[in-house]
Image (cartoon, rainbow, N blue to C red):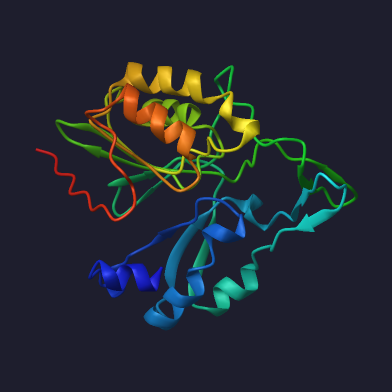
Length: 240
């Protein structure tokens, strides 16, 4: 995170808050570097209380790979003011909406495959929903909603519907971030997702790391005027 911020000439000391997308470790690994850069800044960090859930992935051979679990003690020790919220909330004097837990309303976004499991306190169980997944929403006046996802584990159409419901704004101007459509478990979701996104006609579509090349190609073909590569691209979004 710090390396990329330096490449983009972003001054991290100007940050006023952190929103953690979900508890998977690959979305939190840059926090230590940011904490080192900021020092004891007491930075507010908004997250869903289930980010602390122990999770693992079953392999085809039948073994299990435990995923690293976030530590509240470590985060507070690094200077973050951890704020746990399930419900939607506002950040930066009400300018930013954090979705909190996203309702699952589509018929085709079924979440993680059975190999993704969570520890209940007594046993391991299939964890399809990843309920800690949340997104950030900004309304650009005169343009529509800008929705930033982390990994889209809740399903990107579920997330967009949630954003529309919370803001009472139907128009989606931009969708930026991971859509999690890669791999055999999710490739069947590509077609209905692309259909739903096409109906929303966003002006900017920048799918992130976990979208997968099949979905990227399909989205680029379906929305050629909106799709842009998400790597190495800077977006300046301005409302009236």
